[in-house]
Image (cartoon, rainbow, N blue to C red; front, side, top):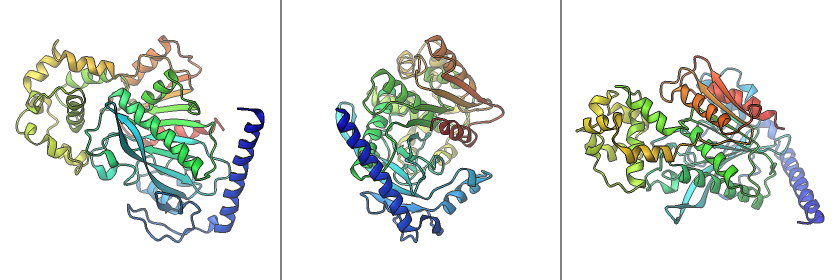
Length: 409
């Protein structure tokens, strides 16, 4: 691209930002009224310059965003919320098992930002109810990162791709679906003249979202994509070493969220076409209604209510014995294959993790950090951030992540 062409593009972007500010003046953004969040498209009193864009769903005021914080026990919500936002649903194309499929996600655009916002790709944690998919609802990360354009992919298995078994903790599919969403999301912004900073791309997510964040970062650093250079990556409480997490779970006799075990065994059985009966993994009567529990109607708590936390009663005894011994080698090999801890990140990276996490033990992040350094990551660039006394809670990490992301402006 010539210097003249670059100058033209910069001029167009500046004009786009000026146009946005003019819209803000016309629509009197500071005079917003309370707006309810719903999954329907409501008639709202807040004027939104983006409501005419394709796939617009609703507008959310700062009052509503702050109320979400307060309901979740977050103090001083004023420090997190600066702008009302426009919520959009996007359907895009990605690849699954060599086939082109449609997938979906949400884009949240701040209204009247003071500077052109960067992009945060937020990867959500484990979910079961399709109604919780970001494109259908409001995810945990939605109120956060208010000063950025927020991309929240559904992942394959939710939203428009809900008929596919979610490929839970499967590296290649997890990374590809998110990268394709980021590509499509940037095109959506460009096509609709939404001003943003194309050189700022942040990655973050909690739990499964932490794992997917590292998977996306690894893929982008291993196979660079033009225009998708990672500015900073902040995964939280992810099971990056899936094989180690499996060992830590199954060496104990109880696990507080057995729904996770249903999801990963079902996902691997489907994706790798093992075609093993559920009775290979789970005892009766649980093996009878696994598909019913995973049909997208129940959330994590609803599924856990139908199960037992006692692994000796939940899991098939032969499976459990073999896994704890030298058996179930194929399953263990696939867990190792899909682990994302054994490489060296080059982009600024911080691993956040509560030291009292009983779902994904803190030692997983500790081992992952050590592996990153052994593989050649710079200790000035890659850091481990322990959260003393915190369990599997995302709010404490996101407060720190917000502050860290702001240092890259």
